[in-house]
Image (cartoon, rainbow, N blue to C red; front, side):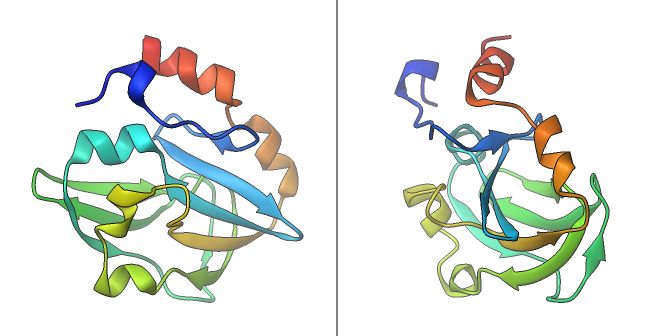
Length: 131
């Protein structure tokens, strides 16, 4: 596993305690897992997501991600409607290991965009990892 100094972080994203990242673009946000999360999981072999059109609340489970080590639940960082699921991961889930910030999981149309403000900044996420 990587040391903190070896992990990739992206400025301008928001992060969760569950090691997901969020980025806003227009009126939607994309959600993925962080480099820390994919590193801890090991080789990812399967990603299961929600259906387009699903309405979920912040904190709801929206899917699972499976590695050779474990299966982990994925939790929605903000409330909203699923408008896209990254179908490329159906055939190539290992792409999340290669670049977890390029290979997002879902795209959401937030029902309450102010929930983004409650997510961690990059600095706060790094502090979480140090603890």
